[in-house]
Length: 301
Image 1 (cartoon, rainbow, N blue to C red):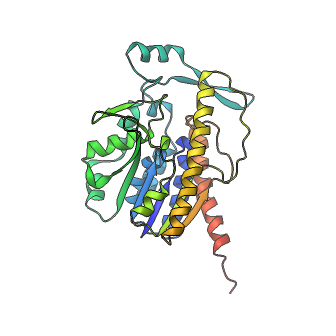
Image 2: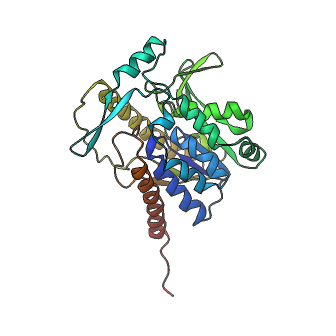
Image 3: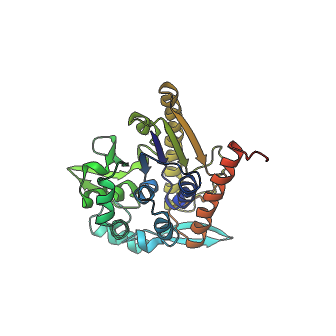
């Protein structure tokens, strides 16, 4: 049983799309299980449908307006470096409405429903592949995995949305009496869960470099400090997930093929830039191609 696991990573998901495209179209890998966290959850339904060009079009054209119904920050560029600053008016609007977060991401839920149709959902639910979304239940202090087989169309779209909600910048969702947030807060790379579900070969796409190549610039404001703190915590969670995944794989005779980003793509994955994300998709495709050529060199005739 072969599984594809895609980690969280915001806008860097475009790189994962390129890797997945190569593995599926050129290497002809057939996956029985697709698991995703955060941005990975946005990709996997369309990958399972083999509708790669469709999701590529979405990923390489998305912007802040497609994500946020109330964006809590503004993007500032200085000396060629992008930073985020507080949009005080939007943040105050959210607080006056009684929201628990700085911003709201209801536009993302609309985008998900506009991209994944009811017919496509039914095709997946009636098919042999399993699609599993990672979410964090803050009320019960646990990670939960939501399979497409267990929910209606509206419910599953909402779980995808919840998996992507990077609180406190995006919507905190109350569902079934519990508060839910981004799946990455609990499991950035759900390799262990994929193996528990029967995977013997896992292609894990990690939207981070294998070795740390980053020395963060000093924080400019409270938002940049928060994003740096969350990035630090998510990196630690990711490394822990990978170590546990390797341990579980060893004890279950499973194979994990890792696809890390070769370079630091961005220091702020909440910034969605069309040109950059288009380049990352192509970069992911080419990286997977070169990696597989290194592993399986073409024999001279």
